[in-house]
Image (cartoon, rainbow, N blue to C red):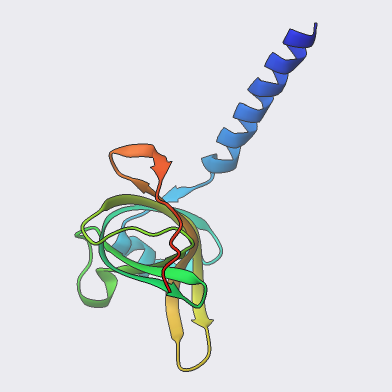
Length: 134
């Protein structure tokens, strides 16, 4: 009976985990930029390539990604995370769309994908390590 309860609990936990991520919306970089008002507060997933990483700023890492969609201002996104990635990394990013984030000191971001997690595009199970750079 105990084995049955443990198996049932394991199945329930797996089901709950899959449901929690079922609402994620996969978007291109351009689509997040163009649809930002409708996406505000929603969790999105974006596949892209890291173009720049600024680590350890205001207790977070600022990662820039592109995916080949969009032009000019709609061609890239800035992601904030405790995790980091290196320029050139192909990643899958999942985070929450935030608009008009003001960190003070003149740092106002009209669009961010915040509190994101990074996975390498070829290995969806391995997140990047947290950065301790300052």
